[in-house]
Image 1: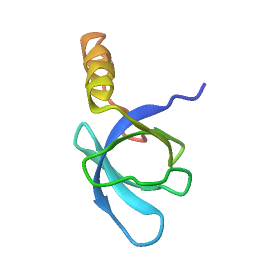
Image 2: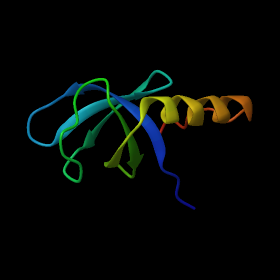
Image 3: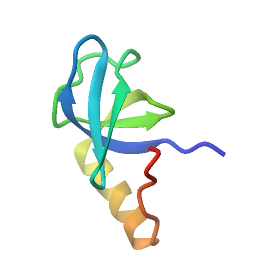
Length: 77
């Protein structure tokens, strides 16, 4: 089973790369599939690729739902 997660972009790197944060876990990902991403944006992350930008309010609601269900952010996001 695969899961796509909302993550916050904390740093833009060279090329199409960025660093994202999910619950304190930081990971370098590809932005090759999404245009116009800036630091502070939320994106949906799946297997190392941002799939789309996400409204910040929707991202926060989704993360709050995960937390309320007792689901911790996976370290391998």
